Amino acid sequence: MKFRYVALLCLGLGLLMGRFISKPKPSWRPLSEISGAGKVLDSRLQTIAIAGDERISSATIDFEVEFASIGVYDDLSQLSEAETSKVSLGLKEQVLRQLIERKLLLQMIGRDKYFDKTAPELYTECTDAAANIIKSNEFIKTNPLFQTLLREKLCESSLIESYISDRLTKDLKVTPKEVSTELNKLKNNTALEPMVSLKQILVATEEEAKSVKLTLTSSNFSSVAKEKSIAPEGKNGGLLTDLRRSGLASIFDVAFSMQPGQISDIIKTPYGFHIVQLIKKGKSSGYDNIEAEDRIARDLLKEKKAEERKKWVLLALRTYDVRWATSSSF
Image (cartoon, rainbow, N blue to C red; front, side):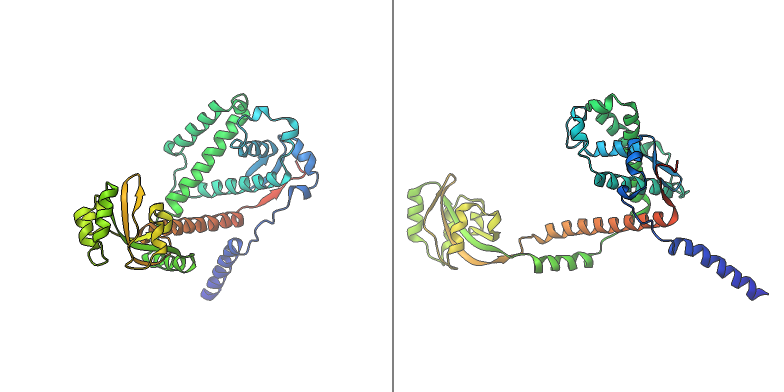
């Protein structure tokens, strides 16, 4: 008897897990393939799809297509009918996918009893952003429906990002080993850039430069630089190390055609008169290690967050049904 109950329990758990693991993702059908798609898109209140318990109407899709154009057109009210008709079904399909994803994620958030989605502070920034857009855009300012849809879009997106930050990715970290591995890949795959180390002497007048040049040898360059140079590095014998060509002033271009130990002719610039000695030439990956490590750590963390978001979206698609509407369905 005991084993029978265990077997039934295992069967029940298997069926429950199967709903989440084996449930297929919805296959996205192009709007152009939906029966009566033209009529559907003409009706602003017509339901296009149902994502879980949320209906998505043609009016919402139309608005989000317009919203996507705000950054392109300064004043949507000036768009002609011909220009508006250029919005393709392809763009509407993208908007529809984003809407479905957003509505499903909001329902996923509603299932988390440890996250208070009614907290006022979650909506301050998005409400202010909507108010600023409404104030500056005549087309939305004169359309109460679009004002409502704008606030809804911004605040829904803001809520999702807050949830991702607070609940999904808060504890994500990038290890030093991960950074080191990526840095080595970067160094191996990046085209090497010419680099030099050199010494320079900078003096104020041409007469002084000529006098200094007469006394210079490869062995006394550092001591003369300490005595005569007015450049900040003069106190260090004029030494400038590991200079990448892309970051160098043009006055030092001569160094790339010199040989180690060689001393240049006098170079005149607005700063005075320069004499350069090449110490060594080489090649660099073009990245400062500390700078590159910081950037790599940021990029890796961004990738990890994007992967967690992707997993969450896939879970939402397996958890809720997505149904497509036709012109005769509703």
